[in-house]
Length: 69
Image 1: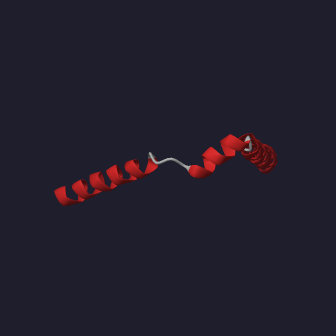
Image 2 (image 1 turned 120 degrees about the vertical axis):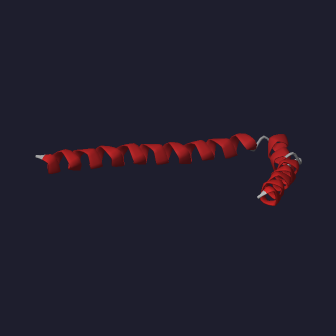
């Protein structure tokens, strides 16, 4: 059991070391000013998903109310 815990601990340490490296693509986007375009696209996609989920929830709630009657 101790071997598994040590292996997990070392693997997490390795992943944390890899996560600290510089990301060249993000630096280039930031330097070109395109990072804001990327953020805007992600926000539009996420807001569309949330709106879709809210409308779907309303439809399901209406169907549940109809079934209870």
